[in-house]
Image 1 (cartoon, one colour):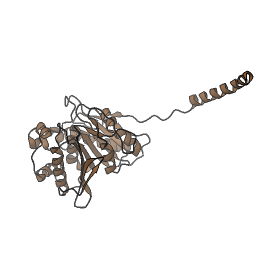
Image 2 (image 1 turned 60 degrees about the vertical axis):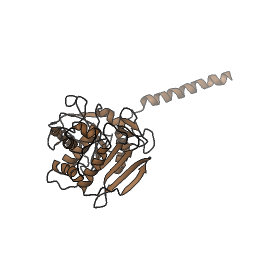
Image 3 (image 1 turned 90 degrees about the horizontal axis):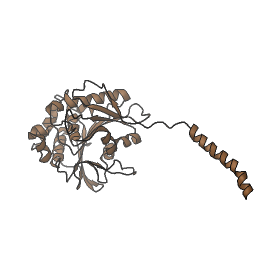
Image 4 (image 1 turned 30 degrees about the vertical axis):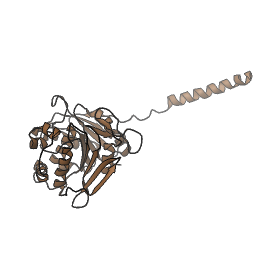
Length: 326
């Protein structure tokens, strides 16, 4: 037995050395994509920062998603917490992530309530629009498949972009956000958030139509996610968003689909042509934050944390499916 072991040692050592060499000499794997800052994307009147995520090897003609973070958040945290970058890799699209600066807002909220930042051609709205143009040019993206979404103040800015630049976006996703022109209607942002503004559907719709004078459509479709236990942005704002955007699309306020998704009430409103123009998810018992569903399942995405709430439903996945990203 001793002689056999001795005889085997050179063979074993040779095999181990060969295996080690194969690892050392193997070509390095391609580096994974990462979040990158983009400078010089335009005149940037809103003084925002632009970040983006582009999956390695992304072909031309793919969709673009603009994702706007909430107050106290940043682009990198929102990119990973929501699951948008994971879905970008899986389905093949790029993500633009605007980032607020404390010089504009101490809490790093997008200024959805400031008239200087919510009108076409000026302020933060114009900066985000310039980011879209730069991204489409750089990645040869599909201009007919650009989408915008955001949480809280980012949701308020999503409504701004849909109203002020409707020709740029096929659809929007507002998470715990507010209707366009709410602060103007209520007199203050805090009334909007904590109570909700009182307007008729036509008055809400007129605010959107006034943001892009002379525009006759098509208007972006809207999906809304709202927690029923959200005491920061009250559920009345989802009702106002439904009133606003069904009016803009010429749809009635009676849901054509009423069911549940992952145990949460889900409604779909069809426009005159029979297509879905407004969709809502009422997250039962959820507070203020982005719905996520951490895990490796097909419909799961996101990571739980501050303002990323595990409610067994991932908003980014639901939006991606509604927008036919994957």
